[in-house]
Length: 262
Image (cartoon, rainbow, N blue to C red; front, side, top):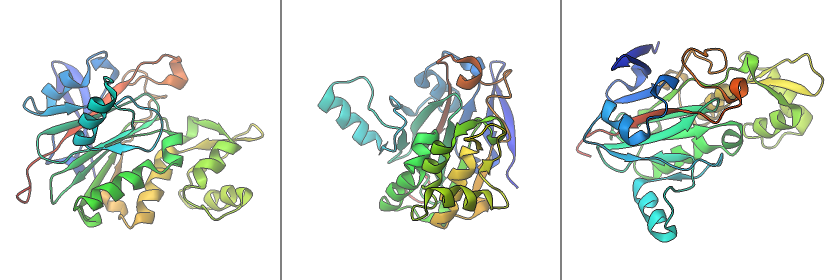
């Protein structure tokens, strides 16, 4: 069983997960606001280079080289994407979230890592399978992956429309009719769809959908850890857009390491 630990930096709390033990990483709390990623990298690994994105709720996943190329081509300050995958050691990759799911992935053989921002839209667009496909093309093997999903809004408090539920459910059951999607997923013992008293609404567990996508790829549930924290229900630690309607975020990041001669 994977455990989650509270760490402190200068009296400020952040979370780590035992599944990512060899990698410097953290799911940072609102107490670190408004420190940017390059400052937070110093908490994890001062020598690492820092990469972040302008997140757009999509499924584009970039390498640091692609980020640098994007900035050269377009002259923007930040590349538009929702995921980052490292290519060598000492690269820190970061994503921001409020209620969306921050996902940190590590390769236990090569030491490479990924950071993904998975809201319902990115999840519906299968950002996690996209990222893993890209990692596989760079030499990763499924059995070497370790996945930690950080604090996000929990299913029991996340009300969405039936249309949203169908859209995200079709990422798991693409060949099913809309009404079949809801019924089939509700029939699972650990369903990502929870009932809602309001007609036309459903409660959605986005992290569970991402876990189902991972398991569909052939990743064992023992390779996945989910934080037991809800951003909406933990106002002492996390910003929640649903709760506050403010555009404030917490950052999650991980630093690649040298393993197996890579």
